[in-house]
Image (cartoon, rainbow, N blue to C red; front, side, top):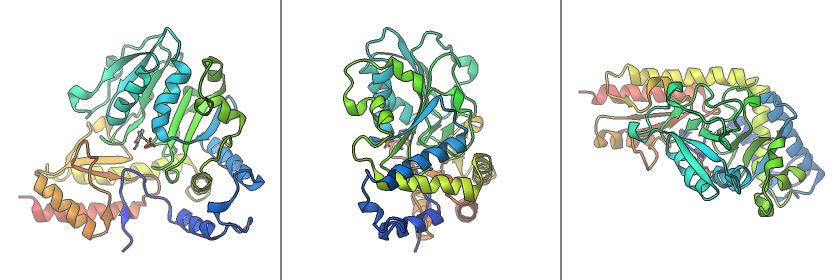
Length: 363
Ligand code: PMP
């Protein structure tokens, strides 16, 4: 049976993209070779990188002030590369919002490079909510502000952009990149690994304001210096050709099949609303993790009354073809990840399953 992939990541990809990928593994028609064996130095692959970049620019209406890079090392390497660029050998402090599992992981890496201030820490609230504007005393002199737009583990998502526009703003968008429109001019550096909304694991998209690179300190390792990748158009050493090709296919799907990010956002809102409605109408049987105003449109996290019921829920869900619903190992519970490629029909069938399970087990 083909399971529906509700995993937190690597996530679901569009069926049409999987079909094209399957064809490309056999043979990319215009090249006559498998995508797994095409030279990264070929003109064809340079064209793939160019078109993927162009599509991302079009989807985001990204100005020329910002560069698009395709890097390796996952989002985790960005936890280090960013402070290497912006904090190393500086007297300034970097401000970090500690709003969940992933933003917390970025902080110790930044501390290796310089001074870090945790501007807000959500741990006392169990990472169930995000800061309100009046809880954030921003510094004008910070080297930068770092935050995670969607905390994948806890299922909490910023619905407004925090920070001061005059302070360098850095955002990990790994789990909501290209799921909704945003104003890219308000960001100085954005990074997102591919394996949620835009492709398979192996490539990380970085969008950065070109003039940030004037701040680069001397002595960075070549591969950890954004300038290396900018100058080489993301083909400095052997890049993940396959992963970048699939990102290209997904950006084509977003542009041509979905019709852009406004449309994608509307679909994603509808999917999330259906699931949260089941939670809210379940008379407390399903207990949503996130504060209502911070609910994620990508990761719907909830608990059942007992661990036994959660185990039974996961077991029956798997039997019925719903995969990947087990919550993150750090949090437990249930997490339904409904990235771009998860269809509204699949979400509706999960909602039906949740109702049936609640009816059978709610005392
Ligand atoms: N940031 C966020 C928001 C994530 O969800 C994840 C992984 N799920 C990471 C960073 C780490 O990504 P990677 O495994 O690509 O290093």
